[in-house]
Length: 485
Image 1: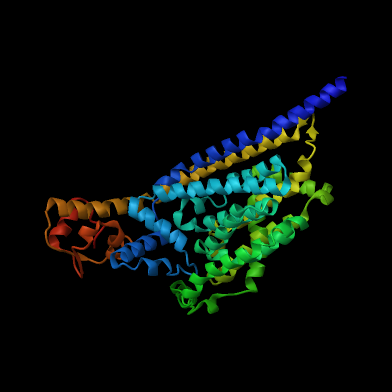
Image 2: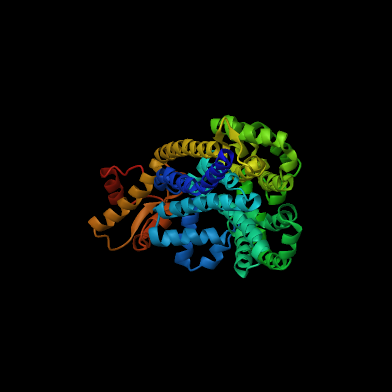
């Protein structure tokens, strides 16, 4: 009788622990989102400045359609450019709106990782592990905090949405999931050129992650996804000449994409990157080195037959092949350049999160106990502590980056204030002559004025070799002298 009661209590405890994963996930998501609050003050940087300059020029010259399809390096990204346009239209150069979109996007990635992992393993603890790794890692914090680096996150979101929709369609064959998968494939290349690999991973996901019956249910899905992929290819075909001769190739002495593409060297670089950089970066963090990493290794050694290795292989291919493609087009910049870009950790970390979860799944099946403590409880504590540790570091990194970029933020504020106040105080009715050069930044004064200044002021400025003496005296008196040469 006592044994029976004990058994019933254990089952009840296990059920409660499994149900308790959702509140833990909720806490992880909330704390993750709050850890990104310092990023709201990080201004637009680097490529963002070019995007805003170009969108302002496109609005004034009524060439929006042409601008949307103009490549940014190798990427034809009308979806992202539409977001830049909306942010510029409604909040000008204040970055908060775009940062909020990125935060929502990252929360979506965590939720999709959780849901996709659950579908693949039917294990709540495994799903929580996968979501926690994405939320805990600090390897690509800069890709979240700096808007210009966040484009690859949009690509990852749509990839995960595609896989999730494909799996759901294989179970339910609903039109809504077919449409979701269709639009995921359609939008992927419009966020990042890596999205053009989507059709490859559609086939691989079908072969490696779905059962025979599920593949049969998805037979009607493939024609729709192929059509979506062909449609997503059209903007790249339209802009093919501009892509082949992109201006940034000249920085490394190349005239076209064919001169910077390398297929052999990136294989060695990817091997070195994985062995000498990615794995040490993952295992160096205490929450992975002494927790999930060795736990996954132990499970792989002791229960190899219970692990669904095909799914593991799929996500390894997903993470490393996409990085290989990046290396093919960036090898001319050198290994140091590639390793210094946090955004190139996005796909490998998604790979690690999903692989860990799938490998650990057999360990959670019967909820084994370690010294009478349920393993699930230990996993929840590990996940929560891992995310808490990652959140504290991310918050600190965000504050540090906000401090580093405060000069750029202040430049934009003072640049606008100098012109607006001068026109208001001096009641300028005619035009104003300004030298087309700033003192502290490489780009011209006109480049910044194009998107920072109100249109009614910008249209009154005439760009000359020297600045109007009255305006020059004004900016010096107001201590804005660093703005205009």
